[in-house]
Image (cartoon, rainbow, N blue to C red; front, side, top):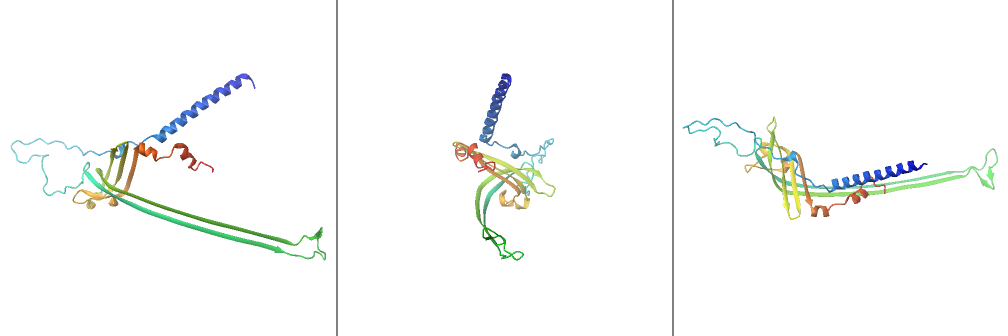
Amino acid sequence: MTEWIRKLLRMLWKAWRVVATALALAAIHACASTPHPDANFAATLPEEIPVADAGNGGIFQNGHDVPLFENSVAHRIGDVLTITLDEKTDASKTAVTTTKKDTAVDTSATSLLGAAPTIRGRNLLNTSLSGTTSFDGEGGSKQSNQLTGGISVTVSKRLANGNLLVRGQKWITINQGREFVRIQGIVRPVDIGPDNTVSSMRVADATIAYGAQGALNDANSKGWLARFFDSKWMPF
């Protein structure tokens, strides 16, 4: 191998090390990235209503009326609705599997064509075979989650059947960390209480997310190398 080929290989190896280091740093940065407010859960503003010309001297003014018998709960795009979070799930599963199999074969023949075939005094037609296989497996899983509190959302869309598509998010900064709650789903107007609240149990197709960022959250999270050893790519 000539000298210039060796130099080319060394240059390629150095370039590959630089690229691999950059990819590793990008992966570490992606793993360490923290969540930010999601634009998909941003508040929906109400539709702009054109201002009508005010009539001088009249008691009734368009755009300034206050309905006396209208329900004050959310029903229009941009209205605010409070969702009471009352989520609690408990799940458990246990599986036990036991199998066992015994096999035995024993054949005996004393002669073949009137004579016993033997080698060194051993009858070749005497055969004995046995085998045993067994398997015991047991597994169990248990999970419990609970989320309580409340979050105010806005109506982003009024569906054709009158149901309301609502979504919103809340960010709370406490000491060295930030916590967020996001929710999106469909609410029936009849499920909204007189105080303009609805339970999260009555939100259809609900998407509820809770997370945090900061020093405390980082301390409770595995590093990228530990996650690699716990991933499915680890052969051991």
